[in-house]
Image 1: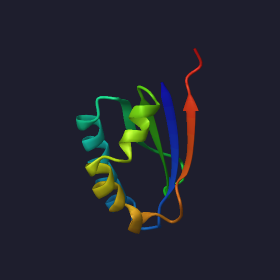
Image 2: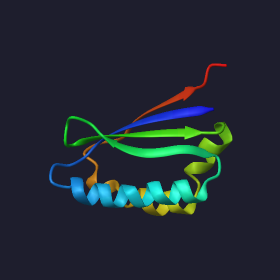
Image 3: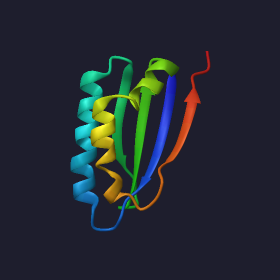
Image 4: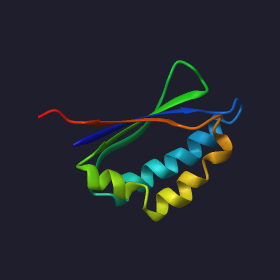
Amino acid sequence: MIGVLVKLNIKEGSEKDFEENMLKLVEATNANEPGVFYYGLLKTDDPQTYQMIEIYKDAESHANHSQTEHFKTLGGALAPFLAGAPEITVHEEIK
């Protein structure tokens, strides 16, 4: 199993639009990717900082995620709301 944490810093004033667009990606990912166990958006105490938590069946499922049409389309639509590059960390389950 692969866990991914993504910290997203959003431009002030764009929170609502960001959430609406990101939730479309969350819905499409959960509906169309059987290798995704969990894909969710969480708020932090800072109104311009969000956290994605992603859990994948395996490395292949994680790699395939960024190649899906919904990720390319919906993920690309998020760029205007971002205040910087996402901070991504990838983690492997200990067995």
